[in-house]
Length: 76
Image (tube, rainbow, N blue to C red; front, side, top):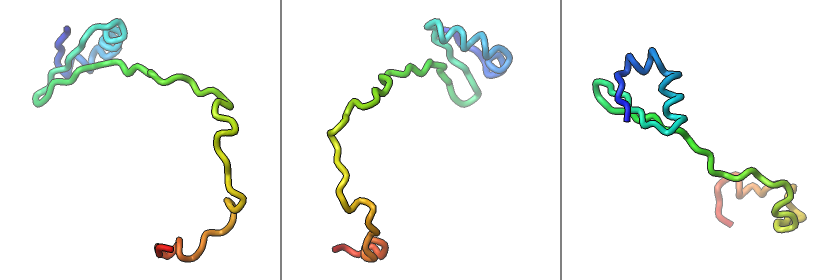
């Protein structure tokens, strides 16, 4: 765990980022709060094209104009 001042973080941000990338905990101490630098790890899988093919349908009237009651906020 590495504690640095805000001025040190400003002066040497690239080194601190490199430490975080390699698993080091880095805390930046300011006058009011303590900040922890952490990597954001993407956990989502890449999308697969066609994965849900034929599982959704669009009604025949999808492109028809909406009724005036919709635009006026009236409940049908």
